[in-house]
Image 1 (cartoon, rainbow, N blue to C red):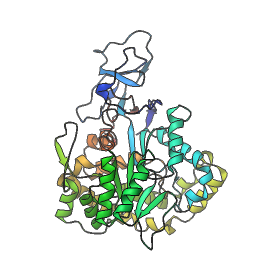
Image 2: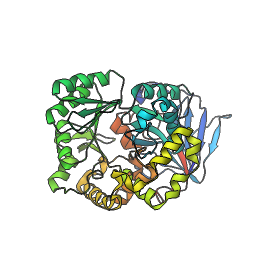
Image 3: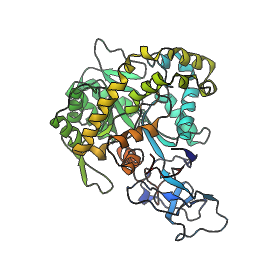
Image 4: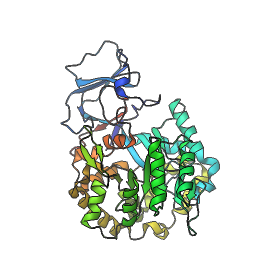
Length: 439
């Protein structure tokens, strides 16, 4: 999608409160008028729409001919275009720039974390992303960046953080600085509480196979009203995560696309063990949300086929000389990066399993996330991932919802975000043409 008008993202991010409890202002400050509105709920688009905004909130939505627009209100004419809710990146990394050596990059450039993360935040916003879920990183730097964005000092999306990743301790696993390793349920409770006290928006776990440890993490987080995200890379890990109560599974079908999935495996992912109510009317019972991150693999295929992409001058403009030279060196031989080996064939298998998941009833659970910042996965490929979900079997409207309504529901902020509707924050984008015809 070619973005014509971006960042109606508003930079006063007060603590989210229920839209029903917000006393809406009455004097409009901005009107978006004309064009087609896809509000995010999945119904028929509204033609010749008007969205009226006051003090960062939407105070009215309707046909331009039917809403009152006071004189002297600033108007943006979007005839011939489509208004959409702002997009969500539901699995991204602010402190990664697509480098080929992600284990070394954060420690090598710790002193430049502020500028790297600020640059990624700006790039994401200019890609139409108005909400960004960072799934693990230096929490102090993350919170500082969010404060600067909220204060209007820097451009960027709304940020939701996981902070330090929780990983199961093992002899072969070496924890990074931004990770905590755990060896027992008692330690799981203590370290989960420690991360929660940092002010995170979600708990992120990686590499867990012990059911009791993972169950304790989930129970502790849920007691605090926080959801749990898990990177899962094998069908056995899926089963453990679902049984433990994990809320969101990342890299499903993509990280481990070569193993088989039985009908029972699919049923488990679609319905879970204790299905939760979901959807606008909370009438759909489902298992965990699924973030496949097909683009995490597809990034390698693009790099293999079009090396010139890695020579683009924007990288020299975007980062410091030291970071730029490091990126160039790590991109010198894409085929040598182990995660990319066999990527093209793995993508085919992953897409086939994703299609099977959709046909089994999982369409309501799918959320668009890309692992942006992973090797060769340059910020931001989100619209490509939306296209992947469309190709796998979602309707065009459902694919759009995977990056708008669904992630807001997943994060528990659907009363303020995820759709263009009265009472919500005015996070929206305007694009050329009709994305329902050309995603």
